Length: 391
Image (tube, rainbow, N blue to C red; front, side):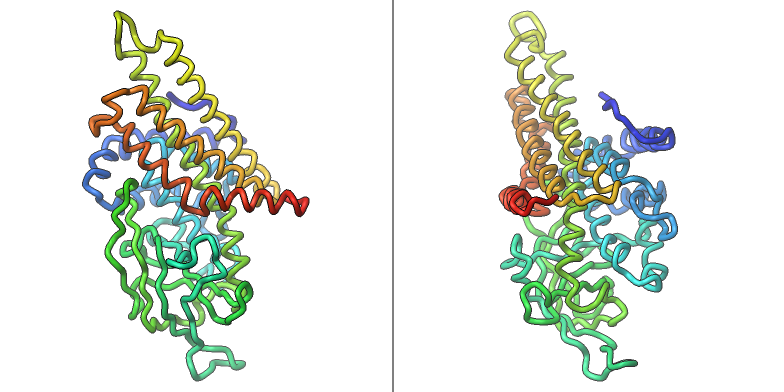
């Protein structure tokens, strides 16, 4: 059932209505079959781009829509309720654009961002490595300044060698926002490069065999002496760590919103099934045990939504939100896991079959507790921020 939303403007309400129409007509009818086949939904991303949905939180002067983050996240939640892989892809694309939109030079932004935010180009975010998941300081992928300097002694290019892991859209993206080591300092030695997909020396390992999100392909990205123009570096050398961590604050909110949408889909499925499924001469919704499960699922989903919206409102107000983003990611993804598990239980044997989407929702929920920083890492972030006395 439609979620009752408090939105800042009438235009935002109209936008959410448009998103619901697109989801009902173009996403929901094909999601289950596409997930079963593992088809990458490139045309769906193009559709969302043409509809203006891939650049919503970015300034209009950069080619975005200039909307508050709280509105963008509610759009993402609506998409997730229809097709989780696509919602995750939209969040990943937004994350991939963030460094350039926030730290890029005006010349870089003018040259690259319009196509990215319009959806003509799809992005991938290359941060993790096999030995550097939660520990970003352990990144080993190396970018070496090309011999022969440009004006003022600046390098003209970088030769990049290394392997990035767990990259969504790998082999399908048009650009790869990649964090590399330009110095041996653990925290001040990282830099950010936006690498085109057609760069010689860029290749991909076979897709990971995942338990869910089959339309969100994940691969290793292999860089073998890949030559990247120095103009593709975002920020100055050594700024990679703060860029990455700043991007992750916003990216965690994207995953929180998507997880909430997934929980809402599982709740709606469970409610509809409980009203129709009869046992002992009446609908199972008439039994208090089922009613209490549905009530707990509603409470968890509502609490999750409130948590991510509060963090987004802080972000929109220009206030620190690192702690609140971690709280939202933790609360929303744990809620999604709990609600989708209960959905399988309410559907009983049918919940365990692929004839209903409950089992898919449960499989998709699990990874939300892992990516964008595991929920154990979110607890570390929250505690650290608390002990510092800051958000």
